Each structure stands twice: as C-alpha cells, then as structure tokens.
Image (cartoon, rainbow, N blue to C red):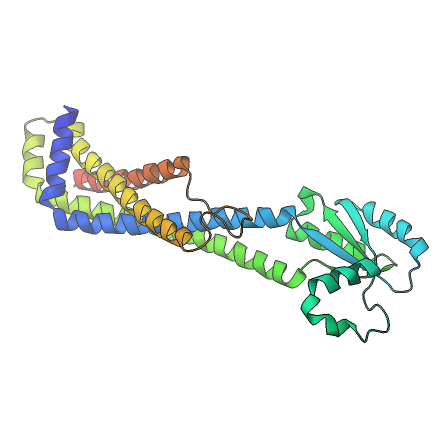
Length: 293
C-alpha cells in the first residue's frame, strides 16, 4: 500500500513539474539561507570562544608607584573576583620586547632619554568572566585601584563586535522565521493547486467511500519529498560554496588558530527533517482547508 502511495505522489510531482520546481527552488533557497546563517554563527562562535581563551586585561601602573609596592598592587588585583592569574611585566622587559618586535625601526629608540613605558600586570580571567558585561565591570574595579593608571582590553572593538554579533544573531533568527513561513506558504499553495487539478478524482474517491487517510497520504508524501529534495539541494549548494572557500584560503583553518568547520552530520539531518516538516505542514494546511469545503 505504501508503494502505491509513493507512486501516486511521484506521479503528481511529475505531472505538475513547473509548480513543484518552483516549490523546490523556494525550499532550497530557504534552507540555503538558514543553513548559511547557522554555519556562520557556528564558526563565529568558535572564533569568539578561541579568542576568549586568550583574553587578558592589561593593567598599567602609575609611574610614581615604587618597585617595592608592586607585590601589594598585584595582590590587590588578584584578590578581585574573576581574576584567575596575574603576571608582572616591568617597564624594562616591556621595552626590550618592543625593541625586538620593531627591529627594522630601531632608529626610533636611539634618542630615548628614558623608558616611556609603564610597569604593567597581565591579568588572566576566569572563564565565567569572559563575557562583555562582566569583563567591563571587572575592568572598572581594577581601574578604581589607587596604583592603577589605566586598563586596556580592546574596549572599543570588543564592544562593537559584541553588538554586531548580537544584532546579527537577532536578524538571523528573524530571517529563519520569515523563510520558514514563506516556504510553508509556497508548499501549501502548490499542494492546493495539485488538489484542485485532481478534485474530480478526489470527489469520486470520497463518494465511493475511500478513507480520508487514503486521500491525504499521497499529498503528505509529496510534501515530505519536496522538503527532503529542497533541503538536499540547498545543503549541497552550501557545501560546494564552503569547499570552494576553504580551498582558496588555508585548508580548514585560519593561520592554524582554529578550524573552519561545516555543519555536523547531526545538524545536516536536523535541517533535512525540518525541511520535510515544512513540506508536510504545507500539505496539511492545504488538505485541511480543501476538505472543509
């Protein structure tokens, strides 16, 4: 019986090729856009998590603070909640490091009368404090210490990047919802047109006592087939674009720091199932409206 239902669903699909191709295109485009957002979100989250692992706050000490007072300043910083570890960097060590990094500009340091760099503490944070809000609060607490002149942790770009990332996330969720509704609407109208093209056959089946599920199942299967095919096409296009992109940069990584990854097999399966759900739901809406008439 199931084979018969699949055969009828396939016949309807082939007999209404133009309508079904439009539906496939719509579902494929929707899946492509949604999966692109998810792929970008996953890799951007990986990048942020990688960056957070190396997150530091640089604490610059006032020039008048004596070397003998540095251990006490370090204890004050380390006593604050959220500070995992600290490392003292003397201004002499900082100058040596700067000179080694700017060997080609060595002439810049020839006329220095004194070391312009301050003593500093490199502050490593607990994982739970590596969020923008808590990081800002902790930086304010450190800056309030009497011996501290300034703190630096990339405030401007970090804040802007966090805002852009949050805005992109909200926009992505909105777009996913819009394309989900658009795909359901297209599938529902396609199935409705197919139903109207077969309305005489359906009426005859109802008159001879055919069960409701006997009438509905082929249309449900057609919606599921449209959803599955559309998802596979959309994901295939995304994978081709992903493969092209990674082949033209570092294969699978950005400078060896973190890997650019595609959607996991589980996520691919979920996307296909959701697309099939969209197809089924569109069929359900059309059948419910038609059979009420």
